[in-house]
Length: 216
Image (cartoon, rainbow, N blue to C red):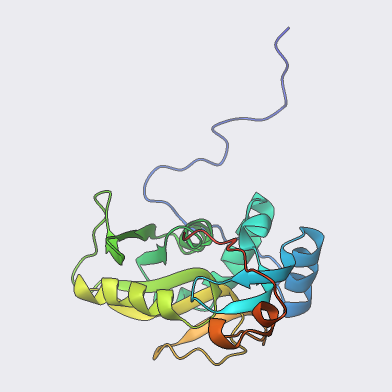
């Protein structure tokens, strides 16, 4: 027997260019973001080697939050509000960590969302992605520590003639110290100690770091 769910697959569908969702949602304040990270087990404790090369005893695994579409959508909408007035036509993220949240910010803004990938050690556009001359773009990350990947992604935009409006991230673990030279917003700013390998007290205690991120 064919079951009817009482839904019309064509209800509300409109032809033409994609329009961003205008459903109002509550702003995600830092306390709510902290609750979500705790709830999803995304705040890890141990000895970690970060993408920046620094060591830390705390790691924020955004993928464990963003695996849930409702959390990803809510974070994307909360971030997108910061640049909605500038009407960017492009969101770009560094692969792999920034892809999901970049897609959600692009969805909320109603614009393209692409990503840059490492090739021979440098971020580049692949897969036929392009940036138009003068195109207004925002860089979207999951976590910023030193801002290195964000700055490198900004360079990709500029090298193709695009215009960087600023950057967004779910987490800023630099305590607001990352220098990007552009407007920047995050949903949760933390000041988590990081260490150079040579002076890491965790290494000094005999511990070996693990690298939980996407870049090997």
